[in-house]
Length: 587
Ligand code: PEP
Ligand code: MG
Image (cartoon, rainbow, N blue to C red):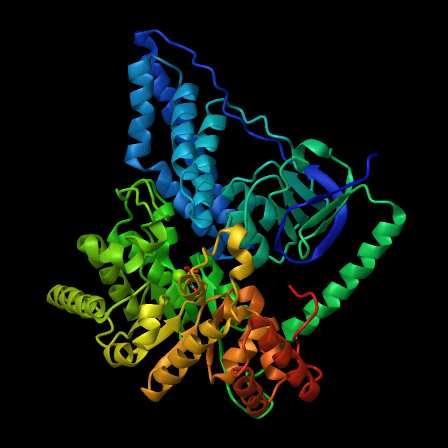
């Protein structure tokens, strides 16, 4: 058996060692079989049956997942059931059968190809990944055109799942069985459903391996290292031993970290900080709380647009927000209004192509152009506020005029709801994200207009340093510790606090121990991050004294470069707090 190693993206940390179980790949066959016009009715009936069978299967899987993993994970199946009922998709399929006198397989192939192209043209990775949901539903219908199902029988032994791609419903079903040790897949990225689910279920996963599904066979022996993003196939004994040791160390470390979830989030000298979670899917709320999150600091509501090929209704928004509010209560939930437009374009939103999307009609700029759509979202958030501690967060604000307009719209929506006697939190807090230098420098003016601020450092760094956050050619310039970034962030935090308003950081800076310590040194209390990083940050902040960190950060702010700042922080904090968790490979 051939020994080789493959590199991919580690999306869920941990190490697993075991036998391969290869998942068969479903391919839409590109063949247009014609039928006579008098058979069209029969073909439409065949499509109907396939849709019905798919509905029954999805409902069964949904129930199974609800029972075995919990209600929150069955949400994706709910979305697929809705997609099955989507009239535009269904009428598209029927139209092709009728107009082209062809079999349903060809119609499914065409619609699948159309969506694939649409989604591939989206540059935002998270949105692009949602193609898999549409693909999932269409594939299931395709499979169900033939009955009975000729699927490979799964056995119950513990295995490492290898596949070309996993449809979201397949991922939910297979990963929830409890016999998957790890996942290794050709496709996918950090924000694919498989990645999110694997993280929530603590299953090590490496995605984007390109061709692993063609290079391994059932029964091959492999190691999946989800921490380092590597897969080792048929390793020799010495390497197996090395990884067994690594696995043990990782598990000790993980147990140690997990304990911090229950510990008080405070520094040695008693400063209480608040770890919050950034999430994209409602099913992430409960796992986030179990990691020690004390609320949802950022719900990226854009994902709702990906659950359907048509525009989500107020009810769609409302159901999701109220579920999150209930699951997180009594902790707060900051619902960010959609951050789409610009490069996060979507087929159902007719946005023109822009020459410079990062500086274009994005986020709140898009919402204020399409006020009706924005009001739908505001109404849904307000209605959900009746169920918990819900707050509104506005992305990419640049000027006071925007806030004034948002407040006016919010007032209008509140009045409409009151007239209809619908319940909502009359005093729902409103906050803005500080993501562009223009907003940062008028923090003193903005705080007077809103209830809180949240610093989106991912974008703030991009706009402050003029470095595209997803362009690897300039990534060497993307420096969170650049003195210019730190001066801005320090100014925002101090100004908000002076104005008596709450402030959080919800960019990646809050999830990195070194920069989190700098933020602590600026007096930051609220750290919002991907939930898997919460234990690590909690451990880092719990092992230091605020007084010392403040002093060191004050000194570091006199330095000239990101590197000098980094070295100063590491050196001076480690001297005082040798246990500060600053370095080393972590999850
Ligand atoms: C940010 O910009 O820091 C942020 C949290 O928003 P997003 O990453 O969704 O742009
Ligand atoms: Mg942002």
